Length: 279
Length: 185
Image (cartoon, rainbow over all chains, first blue to last red):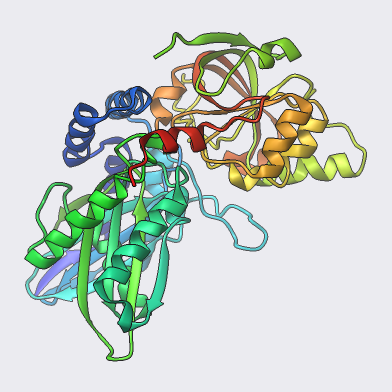
């Protein structure tokens, strides 16, 4: 049994909130560069260039890549041989988010659903905990913006529509979203499980590095097929026309009930922010 | 790409009439921020027949809720938010003299019709480029609804603020035209 002080979790969450919002991942920057080289639309090339410059300013000045610094989604992989001491895990994470958003000059974007009164400190966070073998704690902080989250959907398809029906649904979702989710996007797809599990599969799929292969060859080729169809839509960066509507499609799949075909599409804007740490 | 056109607020009939869909503009002067809840409050004032917190004639509203400014800086990250959520309020504001809107994403047919009727334009700034855009904002001051935090109405002084004309006063729409140009069957 390894003891971990809860204060370390707060400190890590705090710094991950800031780093995620200031420092765009290299996989995203590489994808911008690749897209710019292939783009036919001058407006699209101009926008992709601005996104590269924006990322460099954000990193240098430690200012949010986007003003929507998101709702903090925190994934915790907790080794089963860990004993947390000194407090409550959820509150330790909230405190980390509170300090990160305050000290990092990040926007507080959470409010009461009815009154719309701001909670003032960007809490609560959305926390997903998984117990895993070992004595380490892995934390992933993925701030999620409202614009792209609003374009995401969960649906329960009938099994008869099959793979073709899945492709059609995902492509139609991206088409109907147009410029709203701030393309070029990353499209996370969850297939199978249950209503709630498929949404989580889609969100976790977003965390895989852009340009990496899906370990399942069938899904890897399906990702390519969907991405190709999406980039024929012509939506382009910011929806102003072009070849680069999405940078990647990532799929997670698991078995589902014989009566069901759950499908989730979680759209992620180009400000694709996530940082992780292992304690 | 065509050379960007410099415009200065407040905007006149002639200013907006010469702008066409797809034009790149550099905005100079004063613009005002406003998003969801601030719009609702402005409409409540209009309904009650009360004065707005700023003179809206010829002005531009920028749909943004910036991050807090670091000490010594006029603003934090300040890119556009999605405009469709303001669609229910925009025609009324144009009727009161609003000439321009900056945001991202398509507008409703009602808003597009109102732009033709009241001679106003809609411009897109690059969503998610908040750090870059912040450099063009030289001064920021909250003038109303401070309780709304990031949603408060701010008076911004901008220099060469970059945007693209998406809807002109002639009824054109770059979201439709741009996608049509690159769509493959």
